[in-house]
Image (cartoon, rainbow, N blue to C red; front, side, top):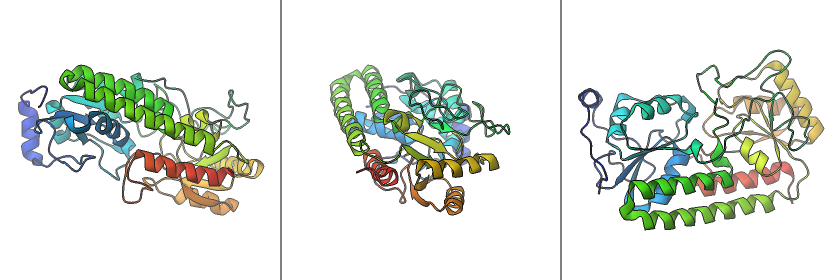
Length: 338
């Protein structure tokens, strides 16, 4: 049952004809195009949003992801075909501030149900401080190094045009905030597709329960550790660090493609020595070259800390929960947790 049908615009139809009627890669095995499934059709911006839609929607939804597995979400540019499919969807689920082209396409689309995950929880500033973490009293800061005395400053909008003015978008890496988003998505689905509201409510409750259990695993798993500091290539883990009293030191900013300054590299070398850092973390969707260079210069090892922006054959798990538990294992080792 497609809750709402609209005729595709002439411009969009021309674009589809030119590009072919190939479908987007969906997170589920069903790859039918949005708008032709007989289900509540949801277009999700990238994996963490698609995962929520699938878990909450269950058998009543068909989920299509705009970001293909293995594609770096920050770099996504919406195609004409994807814009056309947005017009045929019943709902769009996205995270404003992470993918500017998605924000623009959804903003201009006629979709009746537009769910911005950023509005369902509280966003904070990470990745822009010069090196002080007020809450934990740490001299380095949750994500220090994005502005130094040499002027290597990463403003809200970086050189690639990624606008993080609303705050750090990586909310899904904090299970508590992700649960808040899940509850908001569940309510939006119930309103948009009331015939299946009871199932959406039940599925949302089950997902929130699982996320609370994941939060408890992190709390207990990281309780006894020898250091609070971990180094990453990409400043994606500010919320996770804040939730569990850790300090993330990122080589790059919120944009994983940003190159660090020489001063920042020297600062990280000093931090690693002073704070007993053992590991430089890199991620599956971004080159590990910078992490391995820093690790080699400081005698540290490297490991994966996955921001769960997409699931590929290289991921340490098949879904959000499995990859997050792999992250917990990696952090426990790096932080000397017992």
